[in-house]
Image (tube, rainbow, N blue to C red):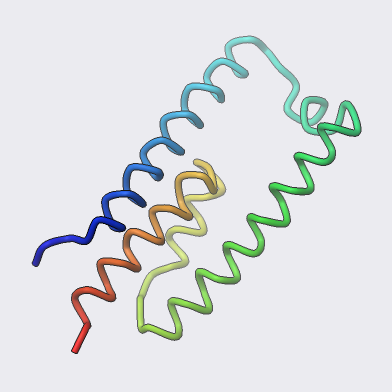
Length: 107
């Protein structure tokens, strides 16, 4: 089976999401930054916080609904991973796995 172009695009985005999360979380931890304050210090920070939070919930709901619709299993693992990595990694990874699942199960 040959993976689709979309699979590789989503996988590349997942890799970028994981790498940037690693780098910036490392810098924040090594710099002793306060995550709570950083997420809520100003109105601009709150906009980003709520924006990302709402998108993350929408992504999780979509992941479960779509997985159920197409018969993908173990989506819960990706949701757990989002809590210890980043939704910027997990959601594109889900889309890549979805693309692969659809390709494997096409009539």
